Image 1 (cartoon, one colour):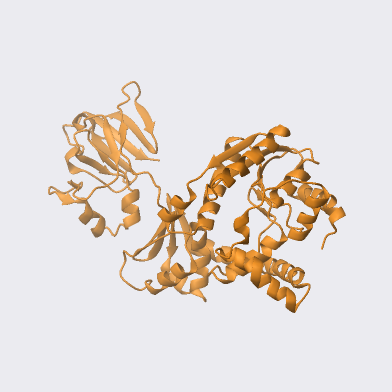
Image 2 (cartoon, rainbow, N blue to C red):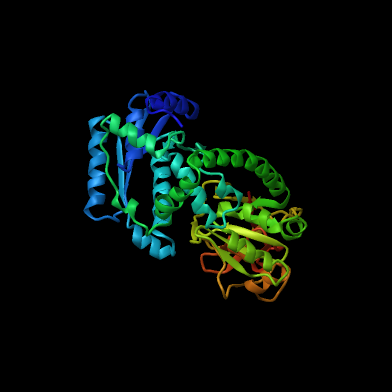
Length: 445
């Protein structure tokens, strides 16, 4: 345990290991004792600092007073102040998650946006040693895997936590000794939240069994962190052999997955970053040998059990139609990932056999063209065939997955007729003939 008169020295050593002197830091300040001590300690450094505060509107006027309190302090020291109010309960109800989880998702998403917009290198939070211990216990109630028992790291991407060396008691003593004002959140003393119950009842019970319990557990968590790094290396190594990033989605080879020992563990570790949990991993394992089409959802992604692969994609991929104007001033132009080239047709004109390239009789096309996603009821005349075919049947016949269907561009005439299933098949009505004079060559880049 650190002595209270040594906190400044330990803090400076810690922050110098986490950030460079030239880095700009965004401090997450709630107004509570931990974040106020963190702010006080940063006043003794030369870092460029900004202060961020979230008003979750959960405690009536107390929430507003917290915000005013933090703003006053930021203004006093001429720190840039960033604040936001959230309808936290509404967000939690909409997603079917706890208030605490909702607040966590909202604040970190906002912190990242503010940091990016204002060129902050790191976001500093005031997590301390007791938070690490409480998180360990909270995660025993969840199916988090080994990662959940490894505590809170001092640095994760652009998040830094410079107070992890200190206990809550040390921080409170330091605040008292230095007359640091802070706001008290009375909800911290309520048993309504799991973390509070652990803090108020479970940990004190262990302390009665062993007086140095918290220190021993904190050190044990450190050992687990080291062991987890070995475990993580193997998980990532196998992931490279089994999981592929393709266009806007990820695919997992089902046969390769099934050959691995402890299949469920590997799958969970791979899909956890996409918001899926252990329970979902267990359910996915049960459908690996069943018919394709089963869908699983996280808050940010959707996973499809296809014929030979599991496919993961974001739930926010754009689906709107896009208008492609004819660029008559140039022989070629590019729209997003499509290159358009006008070519004069000749008797010896050669066509490249490549599904990424399509050729059309330019004089039959009606601009502006429309690039959109497929719709139920879509039909076209596949190249080389005289008859009409439902697009859904074409996708089924060619074993094109649901995700690939949703990610496939449908290029249409302005009049609505499909001219190309981008990357797959063009429409026979717009093929080149001996009467063609002008060719439009379209290449998917």
